[in-house]
Length: 598
Image (cartoon, rainbow, N blue to C red; front, side):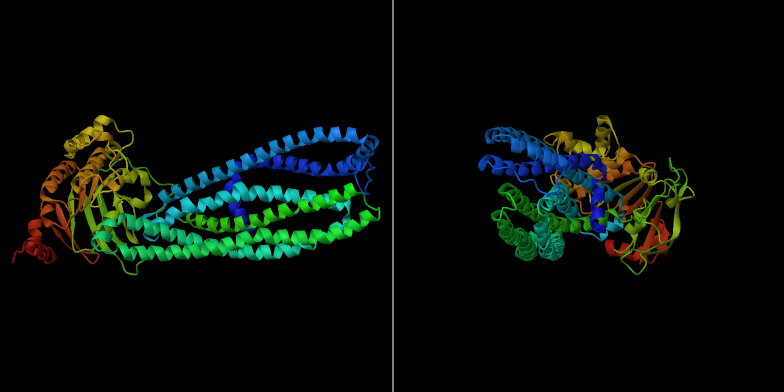
């Protein structure tokens, strides 16, 4: 129950839609009861021309109405019934339409809101969260799990309310008509409910497994589509196919197990209900034969009793749907309740600019998934307009160090201060507005050239975008594209060469024009011509900025204000290029390895 109430929290914004839908359900339920009640005058007054026997314990207004019907001729009763049936079916249909429409609006609205909340949460969560999650699994939360939530609201909650009302109304009717037989029929409840609950638990278990397998399929599909080049050149097509086939087969097995239990619920409840109704038919039939009960009342009782079977079947299906939704809900809440490791303080201070220095003050850092420290006791003062080159072997901690500046991660010990202010004490948006990044990954969005460059600044004018493209040496190749600045670059910019993508990334950074610039292997994996053009663009971008440069090619960092050599998370040497060649051991060895200078 606690899990279900948690699921229903998603409905809170649509509470008035739910109230109106419930009102429509009540009215359509009442009309259903009145429709069944017409069996009595049709059977007793019209078909057999006998008086309706007034049952005991009926309200006075019902007894008065029955007396009135007994005074009418069969033809008059028939005409009245014909008119009443048309009106009742019209009204019932109208309210059924509105209740169904409103519940579907609620269901789709909940899906919209949950997707919005999930995506907002994805944006708020820190970078370490994504290192622990597979992309396909996160996508599955948005695309697959929300479908089960929609079903639980639009059909599951609707049926839970409406069919429960139907059961209550028909239960009330059968007890009013013949309480002894109604009491006998209650033995059906445990016969139906116990297997339904047992099956529901199994359905929830298999639903959880199917959702997990769907997430694995999505993740595998995403990885292999993005890694198609590697798969081809290594000849691993069959290997990847067999991996996908095995996961798909496991998903199929769980789906079949879940479906088997779902489809078994309906015939099971129907058979149990029919068996009980047969026994009641024999008992009540004898009462009619003995003249203690009119045929119309008997027919009304049987019809009311049989009408309970359909709601019970639907409620058993609702239980199954809800079990699936609860499994999905727990996975969604696992994301929504995840706390970001990087948080902005409630009293965070605004930062409007960068004017003096950045200080790494005895910084230690450790990834959550690692026992050892990635950075150890880093002391690094950086003045405004300094160009700091970070060099060292792979895994030395270069990228980790620069990732601490925009607070993609927080330090594990020590502090980083900008103009004397601890980064953890300032507003995140303000801090990141001061920083531009050009990395080797060259991440572009499946959008136009114009929007990819303009991503660096809100509401940038087209003239500013063109100017940034010129400064990044990107203007000429952009104008050669089919739609120039309105050309869509494709997923991750696949329609462009590596050098072209990098120049767009630089244009984006130029447009943002932040005072602090991080260059993470910005010229790696490029041909000589592209590297020359990009280096020219970077030289322009670096003017008047405080720059952190990560580069394996030492030829690109020789003019840095200071070169910082990292080894196993520690600063082991620092100085200018010439100073390190003379006194530095690690740097000189790196330099000799690259240039074969012995």
